[in-house]
Image (tube, rainbow, N blue to C red; front, side):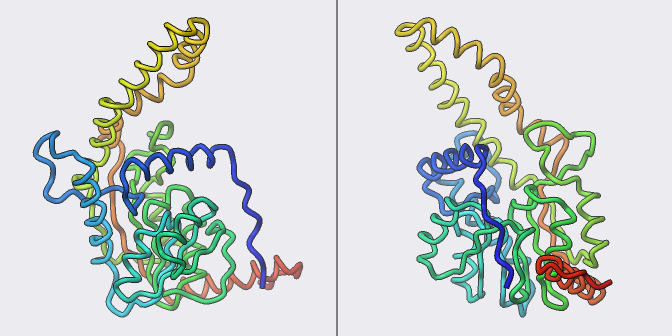
Length: 308
C-alpha cells in the first residue's frame, strides 16, 4: 500500500498553531469553526464567548441535518481538533479524521480519547484503502484547490456518495487579495464539482447566522488586542526607547495594514463573500471517472505506466 508523503511543517503552520493554542485557551471550545447564531444577537452585549460556544454546537447540529438518511461512514477532511467527528460518532456514525498537522493530530486524539482514527496527511495525498458514504469539508475547502477537492472526493466516495461542504465562498472573483482571498470563488468550485460528476442536492446560505462570529472577533480584538498592544508599546517606550522605535516602525511597515483590514472584516465579508452549506451527490459516471483516476495514481506511485 502506498505510504503518505512525509509532512513538512512550514513556518506559517507553526505560527497558525501558536494562534490555535491561544484560541483554545481563550475559548475552551472543542470546535474550530464559526458559530451558527440563532437567534441572532440583538446587541453587542450578546456577543459573548459563552454564546459563541453555543453557536458552534448549533453549527455542527446544522451540518447534521444535511446528512442523508442511510449514511454510515464519514471522512472528516480538515478535522481540526475533533469536535465535529466526536459529535458524529456520538450519533452512531463511523468517522475518520484527516489533517496534515501533527499538533491538530495530538489535540484530535486527546479530545476523541483515541476512539476515532486520524490520518496525518494532506487530502491530496491520502491513499485509498476503502470508500466512504460521505466526505465532510467543514471550513477546510479553502485550503485546497477546487479540482483536488472534486477529484479526490470522487475517488474516495462510494457509488452515490455525498460531499458535504460548509465554508465561506467568494461571490466576487475580483476580490482576490486580502484576509478572505483564499476562499473559493463559488462558480469555480461549482464547475469543478460538476465536471467531476457531482450533482448539487441542496444548499443553504447561512451568512446572516455565521457573520456574528466575525463581529465577536472584531469586538474582542478592539477591547483586548488593541489595548494590550498599546499598553506593551507604552511600557517599551518608557523602558527601552530604541526598541520601541524599531518595533513601531516594523508595525507601521508590516502589521498595521493587517490590523486595519481585520477591523474591516465584517464589511469585507458582506461585500465579497457568503457562507454556504452545500450537499453534493456523486453520480455513477463521476464514480467511474474517480475510480480510473485512483488506478492511474496507484500505477504512477508504483512506477508503472498508467493505463488509459
